[in-house]
Length: 396
Image (cartoon, rainbow, N blue to C red; front, side):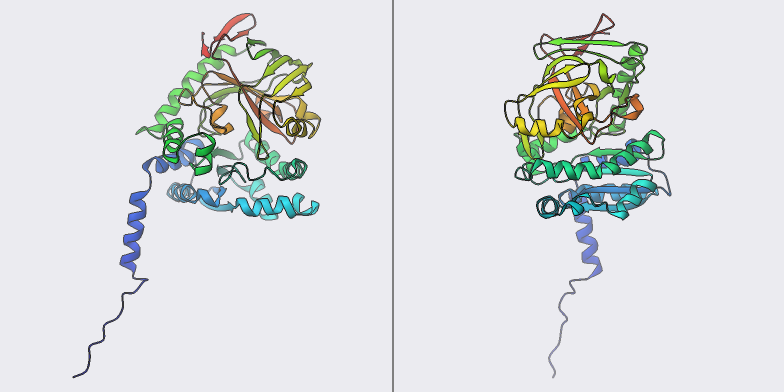
């Protein structure tokens, strides 16, 4: 009698694959699925047949997958562009001038012709926020200046309504460590800041939007801002400029109203309350003094040379391109990540460099660098002589 031969289990057995896929879907944080829904169906309102770019570092792959799935459900045509921190660092360290300034033709076409831009995380800052510390700042500025063409195209097309865009984050060990949190704590913070801990996050964003619009309506036709407090004594004009209701349609999380101040109108000084990371270096204790709009004196307690490198990128880098008030009181802790920190309820921030054209600002620069000033203690904002904001709270 012959022996019975039994076949080994097939590792490619379809039912097994289906089981694994179902298990993976079950393990996906429901908050991440809600985030993807917000990005696709609220922030950018993807429509059937639209070309949608999904960009992010390889470490954000779980989020990219969720966004991809949401785009497919919305009927969009997704293109995925994945970067890698290590490869990006290799380019900055070893690349020639021509390589640093080279623009990938495929991405150039994407920026010129696509309908939607969705970015998860920041290039070169997901695994290690200090990864670029030992890269010469001039090389980073050289890369940024050359690739500013893509940013120009995206922002110009956004003003014309031809391209919608949103940027968000994804919880990683590096960003959690920067915020002095565990990964689980940072995830709770992140999803709370985006309202993804609610059953209906979009309803919460619409509520915030309505509140911000009330403040913008009150500011209509006003011109002169005067900001005073322990960390600031600054005046600026917004004559002829437009305040934007940042309610989650460009940044996620969001929660701010912002404009481009009249470039030559800014006078006084401001001491920024929190450090900011530029090119992998934490710059602390930044103080700027403005005369007729231009930064005439700039100091920092740590890494002042990096501060000056940014301000010397071009002439526009010494003028303000943005003035904003943060309104997201779901964000109260400093994290070291400007996407969150600039929205902290009770703070204002200014950005040296490029203006957003939809505000009416005309400043041109390869730089757009936000810095935050806490207004929650003994601080006031007067608009045309009337008290508008006190100790981090609107009074109108």
